[in-house]
Length: 467
Image 1: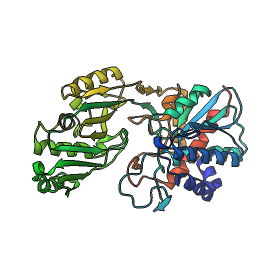
Image 2: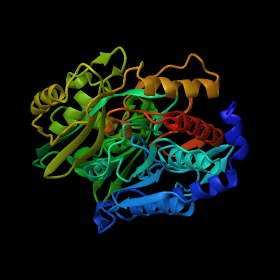
Image 3: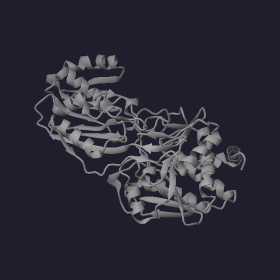
C-alpha cells in the first residue's frame, strides 16, 4: 500500500458513511438516570445509540456483542493479542444557541454540525469504517481487533467499569477521541462536591448554573428578594455590558431575577469559556457585599477567573503535561442548601490526595464541606519511545506529510486511560476546534475522511504481525 490516504479516498463510499453517521447523530444519547431500566442503565438514548452501532456490525458481517446495555464490542480477526479501539456514543446535553438542530446532521461549507459530530460519534464511525474498509479489501489481521463502544463516557465511565469486569483487556490500543498527531499523556481528574447548609436570611434565594462537571456552564440564573435588591435591576445590564456578556434583570412576582449568558467550553479547557456561574457570583459579591452568602464568596474569591487553581492553592504546572485546571461545572444554591461541583485536571507531580486536602482546607474557611468518594482518574502517560507511540506517530507523519509532529498531553480524559498501553489518536488535526461541549459542535468532513485513512493504516500496521 504505497498511498494509504489515496487508497482509502478512492474506495470510501461517502454516501454510505454519511448515511450511517447521520443515523447515529440523530439519536439523543444523553444520559438520563430517571429513565433507567433493563438494558438501558443510563437511559434509553445511550442504549439506542449502542444498539445502532451493533446493528451496523451485524449488517456488515462483524461479530457484535451487547454487554447488558452498558457497552458493546465489534470484533474481528484472530490471534492471542487484542488491539482495542475505544469509542463512545453518549453525548453531553445540547445547551446553548444552535444554528441548526443539534440532533440532526447538518453540512455547511464542508463542515458537519451536530452534537457528537466531533465528540465522539463522528470519530467512532470513522474507526468503524476503517475496519470495514480493511475487511472489504481482504486484509487478514493477525491479532483480534475489538472496537469497544461505551455509553457513559461523559459522566462516570460506568460503562467501562462494567465492560472490563468481565471482558478481556486489550494488550494495546487507541481511542479516537482527542487530537492528532496523538496524545500520550492525559492529566489526572478529580471531581469534588462542596456543600453547605443555608439559613435563607439574606437577599439571595437561589442561584443555579451548569449541568455537568466537565462543561463550563454557559447560563446562570439567580432569584433575589425584590425589596432588598431593587437597585440591581438597573445596574446588572450595564455591568454585563462592561464584562462583554449578555444578561438581563426581570421582576418575577416581586423578586428580582438575574439571567447571565456566558460561554460554554470543555471542562478540560475552562479558560476557553466564560463561566456564567462565577461571573454572576462575582457580580453579587461586588454589589451586595462580602456577607451575602459564604458559597457566593467562595466562588467569587477562589474560582472566578482562576482556571489555574490559584484561588484554591493549586497553581501547578508540569513541563510535559502543562498546568492544572479547575472548572466549576455545577452551582446549585437553594434556600436550605448550597452545592458547588468542581472538576480538577492535574498533571504529573501532584496526587489526588494532595488536591483534596488543599481544597478541603480552603472550603472549610467558607463553611463548606467537601465530599469526595474517589477514586480519582490517575495520570495516564505512555513514554514517547514506546513502540505503540512510535508506530502511530509514524503513520500520522507519513499520511499527512508533517514530519515534525510530536506527541501531546491534554487535560481531557479519554478511554485510553482504561488500558495499560493506549493513547488517544485524533480526530481533530492541529489548529482545528470542534467546539466540543459547546453549541454548534462540528468537524470538517475532509478531516473525518483523512482520519479513516489514518486509522485504517494504523490498524493494519498494528495487527499485520502476531506478537
